[in-house]
Image (cartoon, rainbow, N blue to C red; front, side, top):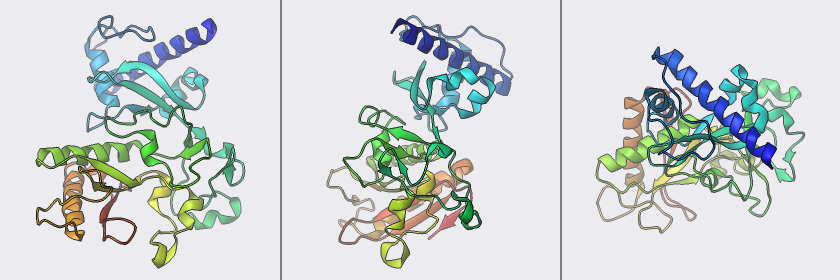
Length: 309
């Protein structure tokens, strides 16, 4: 146990140093003393200097509300960062609200042999199998987070947890698989912030986040409403609605006393405003009417080019 704790402490120190160095290079900042490398050091023991604040600001995204950072680019520079294996690992840094910032290390996609991951049905992404590579419109995911009962409640952002984005099937099967892109998380928090700025309830909910390829295939076509190459399979799309009263459906956002597709249109305009203000998270915005299963909702993604429907 002592060796494990020491290894964790060493990795945390390395991660902190690398993050600080990266920020220093990008911002051409002057050298500064770093945070204490001790795991679990509280804010009173940490030295509040510019390098620390630069590291934290970089990790929190444009919204300031991200609570995870992708370690993959940094692990290329410092292989020791990957020594902890896939999962969510503490960086030793905290956001201004005191919440810990986690490092997100993915299971490489090539580790998934066949259509399953440890008993959880996943299916195949378009182009994952060699024979079907000509069908691929988008790059394959780099990997996925293995979700367990122990990490499903970890915060990805201030207001969204791992479990909020899981595919809605195989409820009792663990572990599960999650593909999630940080720009999408940032965009959702930006939309939430925009709602707050307009004096509206900011209770933004995710109706559908990541979909495994096998789950997405169950709803293909006009009746199912899912695209064969749905962005949901790549972790950069979410179907959202505002639900301050907790009834599981869209709230009356336009103030006409009813919940209709007009409320989805209102939310879509807020999302479009976020796209206009933050082009790096621009993407698709789709408006959907209510049916017997769900209320009206809005699809948002971060595909990089504007699309509206």
